[in-house]
Amino acid sequence: MGRAIRILGIDPGLRRTGWGIIEIEGSRLGFLACGSVSTDDKATLAERLVTLHDGLCQVVADHAPEEAAVEATFVNKDASATLKLGQARGIALLVPALARLPVSEYAPNLVKKTIVGAGHGDKAQIRMMLGVLLPKAYPKTHDAADALAIAICHAHHRQSKMLRVAAGQ
Image (tube, rainbow, N blue to C red; front, top):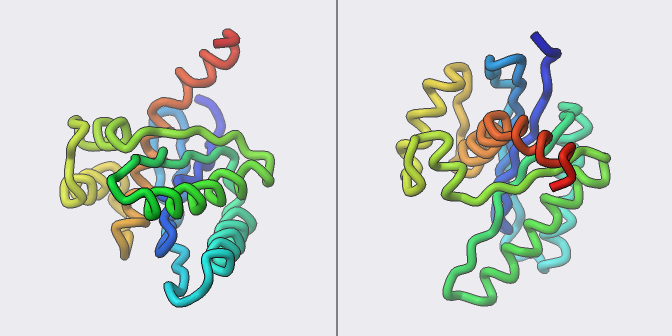
């Protein structure tokens, strides 16, 4: 059996960015921590991005993850909201990259399919399956629950990703 790997999952959002830390050893998953970095919606966009940056930097410093996974952005009809989400997602990618962590990205449907077995599972189904997969986890927000789901998705798909990278694909 290999050594334990600590994974940071990040669910980017401008109001709240969820984060979750799990550990995988062989096929065993373990819950370590989760939470959210919240911003003041009255602050400027730049100030909110700094809050997200600083909060995620603290998470990385406190929990020393070895790999990170970020949910890919979906595009919606509101171009302004999509752009702001993209900027928050940029911070979510930047912080672990600056810490020299390998960062993987996963589509929301793949995360849901990995956790609940269907690509269109709802938040209640994800929380229920988190209780099965990580019985010690009690995320207080949907963002933190989603971040744990992203970390679990990475734990399940990381080996195939590493093999593709090693093969130069």
